[in-house]
Image (cartoon, rainbow, N blue to C red; front, side, top):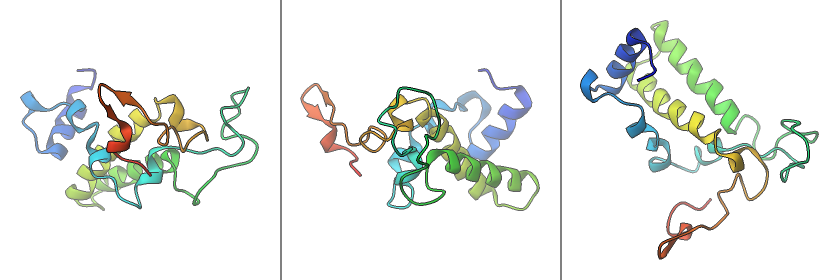
Length: 141
């Protein structure tokens, strides 16, 4: 509801949804449902030596853990470049649609405090009990 009308029109076109049913919330979990070995590290950032730290030095003095360019910050840069290439008519609509779904999810991931610290792989290794189920029944890297 906070998206400008012309942007909403484009978003709805990419999602192939009629404007009346076009919302970002339903696609916000898409990237978790389609998580693969290559995309798993894109959901968080692991700054070395930040467990979490006492200060807000980001990414911390030690740099990043994991593969180069394989964290949520670089993932956002990548998917926004795909969307820009689509605007420039250099990428397919299918690629742009997938990039938009990843972007919505990754922006949400960045709002999860544990996803931006080194502790427990961005919080993914923290087991959570909800009712009678634990997160061990779900994704575990």
